[in-house]
Amino acid sequence: MFIDWLLAPLQYEFMLRGMAAAILVGIVCAVVGTYVVLRGMAFFGDALAHTILPGIALGYIISGGARDTLFWWALGTAIVAALGIGVISKQAQVREDTAIGIIFAGTFALGIALISTVRSYAVDLSHFLFGDVLGVSSHSLWLIVIFGGIVLLTIAAFYKEFMTLSFDPILAITLRLPVGLLNNLLLTLIAVTVAVSLQTVGVALMVAMLVTPAATAYLLTHRLPVMMSLAAIFASLSGVIGLYLSYYLSIASGAAIVLTATLFFLLAFLWKRMKSV
Amino acid sequence: MYSHSHHLDDRPILDVRNLNVRYTGYSALEEISFHLHAGERVAVVGPNGAGKSTLFKAVAGVLQPSSGEVTIYGSGPRGHICIAYIPQRSQVDWKFPVSVADVVMMGRIAKLGLLGWPKKSDWEHVHRALKTVNMDDLSKRQISQLSGGQQQRMFIARAIAQEAELMLMDEPLTGLDTPSQESLLDLLDTLREQHVTVMVATHDLEQAARHFDRIMLLNHRLIAFGEPTAVMRTEILLQAYGTRLRPVDGQAGMVTLDDSCCDEGEHDHVH
Image 1 (cartoon, rainbow over the protein chains, first blue to last red):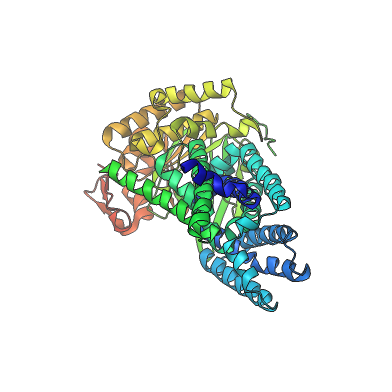
Image 2 (image 1 turned 120 degrees about the vertical axis):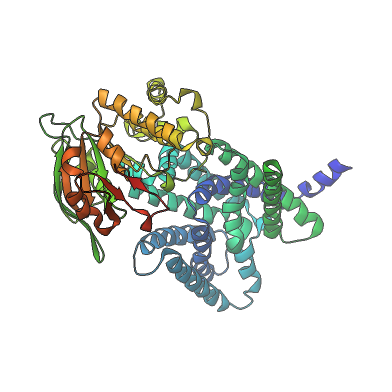
């Protein structure tokens, strides 16, 4: 009975592709999100996800609504936006979070304005904002595998550098690590992650995938590799469970995934509270 | 990327000339000049905001001076990996998910090079460093579970693993109980035996006078730098601390320092 319940959605190929995408994106977001959480970059991550909307909109208009090229538009915009925010937030005229807030809202508005020039834009806009994991093509799935893989390999290669830089930036400088380069590399990795995740959870809910599983893991462990692994497990589970919820309760897939991840966080939070009493 | 300067042994380990550090609107350090020879132990004292941390950061090459020059064995600090800056404990994210051994291993990563992984010899360095600070049994512990004294000694172990020859310790004694302070001061003796040059920022004038070869009195400018008996004189201390210094009696060096106005209730006494 339960087996049938589990297998029923999997007879559809779009469900299988959606599951695969949700799991892969979950793992990549969770691992990168570990640094987003440890370095207090949640607001940056949220802003970055929103700033790519005008890029996607432009690609959408130019390609006449084709979906497969949108990844490249998202990727390009995300990298430019990430490094741009990095530069602007170093200026001393306004506080960093204020600067990010202005850029984030301004570019997001530009994106909506661009998309609204296209007639019957509402459906596509909602896909960009909230994701459309069940519409993932096999082409998109391959892009997720390749670019997600690059992100994970880079994080692994620079593991000790990123850890040191995040824990003690002054130590990183006195050890003469290429600190500026590493910081920009991390911003770029977050940007690639945002582009990779676009179709799964959408712009508006992206920050949840970056932050929530990593924060859940943070509550449960004191070791960085364990935190990354646990975050990846929570994120993958959220993807799978979220898709089942979406299938059986007919709720939006991105929202279902994020709600599941949030539930994991609440459970971990309560467990931690009870343990410390 | 990891090319490091050679040490010219006939030059002082640290030579600071006419160092100025200006932030927008005010001068943190003005015209600081001094030099240290290898193996010296110096206490840097001065009121809060006197520029002690700024001086350390300029010496470590973390902060670019507005003018003047810092040289380590004859060349600029940014070519050297032999300088360790040990942060104030309040500046550290103690909830970061790393163990004591992880933190000490961070001291080795410049030697490992980009993409390099710790080898057996690196772990031996880490464990030897932890043994030196008497923390070998705590290597697997998460850093939030350490006492204040253990936190401080862990950072010194990291500097040892880094094979640092110049250690800059920012307020290491602040907030420690007396036994922890004693064990830290013992550790400074061990470092001296290993010919490590140490600069310690401290609030405690009495400890500075008792345990250090020379005292540097700083308040944006270098007010005095010399042996404790030469520096710990009321008229000199008054220049650094102004009205916050209250002479107890007429004898030189017999003063009470009331430094609580801009600190979390710290009191330092000199008798």
